[in-house]
Length: 584
Image (cartoon, rainbow, N blue to C red):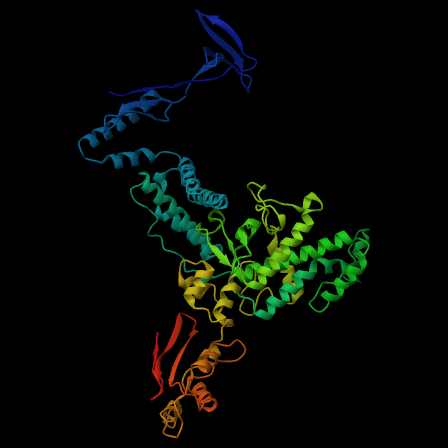
């Protein structure tokens, strides 16, 4: 038979408490924050100090559950009779479990239904911390869950209703919130409910059938890749703009605002791609008397340009680049590469990323400059978390951060884009931001003819679709060149390839040719001119190599369309007819 009672606990003795005896027992008397006199029994703590005995305001039920285990559960009731009814319900459930009418898991789920939702949120976030998710991710999850609970009126697990969430998402859509943001809210609460099922807090997920919003029909921010010319302009501007800011010309304001500030009568001209070099030269002349500050501006500009270049040529995300340290680089290997710690990488895998030879040379020079600067003022050193005693290249600590990536890099990039004459948004509304540099990396891989599977590995993506469709800008691909590579289909019914076959069989006195060395480079995609058709290339090869003796060819090329890779392989065969092809 169960019972209900009020628990007692101890608290430290208040500073102004008065101790007195009553019927041989020690009591204390004090005034609380409201000035009300309080009296409590005194006891001795484990450390020998006096502590007051406090009785809880609500009752606790003590009973045996369906497994005959003694349990205590708070009833939340201040009335003893109400607490007794809660105890009766608990004992009834225990009897149902003993009679196999309900399972122990169902009984455990019932225990969690009336627990405040905030306690479940705290336990869920503790689980995310145990999974070593990033603090930023956990903070976002907490904000999302609290936002949904407040808007939908969810106070306990028993309040979780599908209709409430659908109403919330509908109101968000009417308020103009994007489909992607609404889907993030939906995903967050569904993941929480899935965890509740795993921990026997819920039997089913009430939100699993809530439909996702169509993100493709409501894309608010679409990034675009930068062209090679735009990237060159951006790096040039980023390199000299920190210095050029001190060489800007001034112009008088046409309209003077109220106030006595002298700055109201003039302003500095904005930097443009055409004027930034002259502004940098003027800055060098103005700062000639302060060589240390001049060198600092030069070094800052070089760092910004290197940040952009590293992101474009490695595909690193901003957070990954921010945590990159000197010890993560191996510039002496062939090829050079950098290693990402699993804790700093988005997919938590810890990958090695190859580095182009020209970028490796730039980074070597940058590390040498950092080593020279480190021998000067101590404030030029900045360390990543860890032990800064180990040393790496050029005598630098291996834990020293490679770059000081500013938190407001997106604002700096916007100013560099404006100075370089690169529009923030194109004619289709697509934007350029810091993450667009990673998009540029993926697009440049496709334009260079890199195999899709290799591009996927370079991007460190889990799916090929993400690499080819999301991170590849179809506008910059050589689609026209791919179309030109298709065979000619004349209207007179005589295919161009047939005339080539006549020549190849030797019926017009031509000998078999060794075409492999010249077909491969001519069929390969070219960024500057469209690809030539197969028949055209074979004609050119025949005209230039009539006396070659090897009658075999081996050509492999491919082109990428907008949806999936298209690979054309020409098997090694003798030129007794048209080269047989197989597409896939």
